[in-house]
Amino acid sequence: MQCPALACGGKLVAERAHGITIDRCDRCSGVWFDAEELDRWLATFYADAAGPVEHRMPRRGYGGHPCPRCHDMMDAAGWTDLVFDRCPLCHGLFVQSRKLTSLESDPPPAHSMSTTLRIKELMVEAGADILAASGIAVLVLRLLA
Image (cartoon, rainbow, N blue to C red; front, side, top):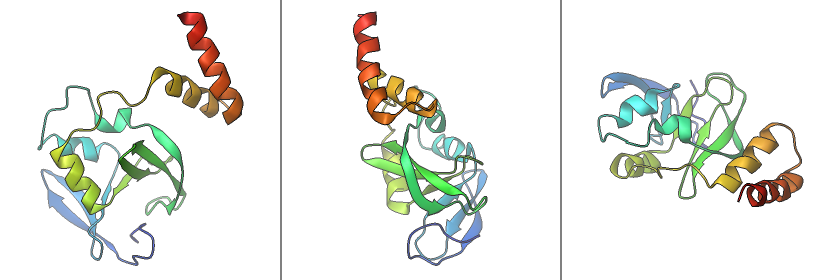
């Protein structure tokens, strides 16, 4: 498989570590995790009381890299200081080596996003306009308060 990192041109090579097989780029050392492999990888570093990282990783928008498996464009997913590329079809994740090192030493936030942002994200996923979703999310929270 071809590495999805911009201007890398490397190949993803299978490697066994921490009880799973991952694909590491032979040039940039970025890592491709198939669905749920990142959770199994991180289990060797710490127990995350907030639950599996992959399931609470919020979508951050459209990415600019093709999935090495599906060749579909990946989405950006993660948190403010920790953003990855995630395939919307196969749910694989590409993680740059420096970000993986950071994730191995510090668990991600316990909560993926605020309630307002989560409502907005759900509305956008359902097809609402991004600007309308922001206003509606605030109104919904005011009604619930």
